[in-house]
Amino acid sequence: MPAPMDHPASLLSPLPGLPALETPLAREGHVFVQGATMRGLLEAAGGLADWDRFAASWSDLALDSHMADGGRYRRRRHAVYAAAATGPIQRQPHQPHYQSLDYNRLNGGIARWFEPILPETGGACLDTLLGFCRDLFGRLSPQVARWHIEAHQFRIEARNDEAGQPTPEGVHRDGVDWVLVLLVRRHNIASGVTTIHRPDGSALGSFTLTAPCDATLIDDNRVYHGVTAVQPLDPAQPAHRDVLVLTFRREA
Image (cartoon, rainbow, N blue to C red; front, side, top):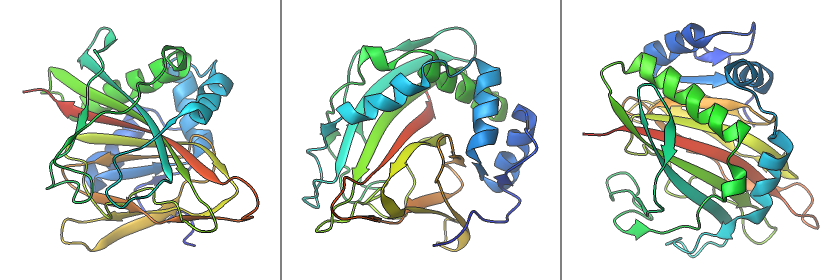
């Protein structure tokens, strides 16, 4: 399993501010941030006072019934938000998630309805994450007046008879402008290596999200990403990988 990459797009220490994240994102199109560093940034941006409740909400996700590969390894909830460059970030009426087949060869081309993120999951953590990303991505895209934001809670389960696929569509782009992937928890799993690629498929680096708040931020217009399958360490015990994915797309 590759270790976190020794690469200009890794931020391990010391604790950076937004400009320190901005530089590698603008230069490389992606950045890996270790959990302790990311947590410090988020605490400074608004706090994570309800982290335990936030993380526990991943135990109440619904099975993803749209898996064209027939897999039953993914659970999720979904919500949509709208935000201007400043001011409140507002949750929108529940709506489907859509990706064209250009971006998702496995599950794209249809409107996929998922169970909504529960109201009680919103709070300090989600508010802080949404605001932090809006501010960072806004610095990198100052011309954007308004964002369409989608939040995805994912639990990828692994069993002895079925590996869990965090990105069953393979190495891909999401069809947005910016992406945050934040690890909430890993339990009893091996692998789950994130790989970053140029559009021609050549590798830019790899790393593994292992600790709570380990994160990667991605310029989806410039790089592709994928995650290898996860397997249980102890097949007799539950095994899962919980992540929050936030995508930001400029509104026309």
